[in-house]
Length: 202
Image (cartoon, rainbow, N blue to C red; front, side, top):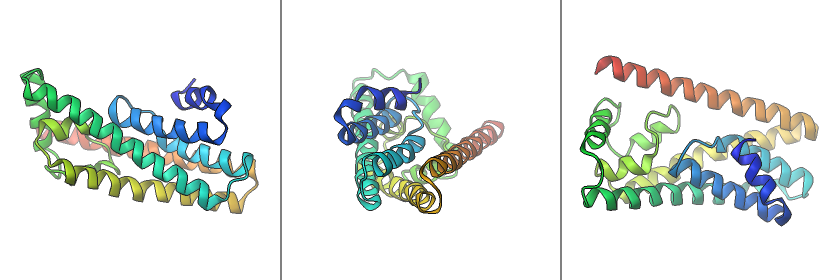
């Protein structure tokens, strides 16, 4: 069972609040620990709120957007704080530190702006760790996390809302979820292609 399904099921007894808590945790874990496909679940939970719990589409989208961004920021800042503390104490292995710094030299952008590009074609995982090790400005980094996330998730929620108007509940879920999975797959392939190009250049 996917992490999002597990969280949704575990918190289902809370009703809509459980879905919102699950979204926050999904985005936090995705930013701080490992990929959790939050894009798929923000759309799935939107339909759950609108069709099952009869929330107004605008209210559902706004609540999910706020909590998704909050989870994203908390995950990145939390990871940054942990890695920064380890880095200051010399606990980050030099080999890993050198590898991370060398990796950023082959990126199209070599500062905080890379966070925006990373939304389209992921090339740096665990962004908070890179912010800490590479000495990126935390305030700027958080601003880019918020800006890139807001654009991406607003577009996904707008897609879900459009599908909800155009099709029946079941069909809109299927079409929107399929489109999001395709978009995530394209983003993953683009990121992988970029990483291969950078490795070849190295």
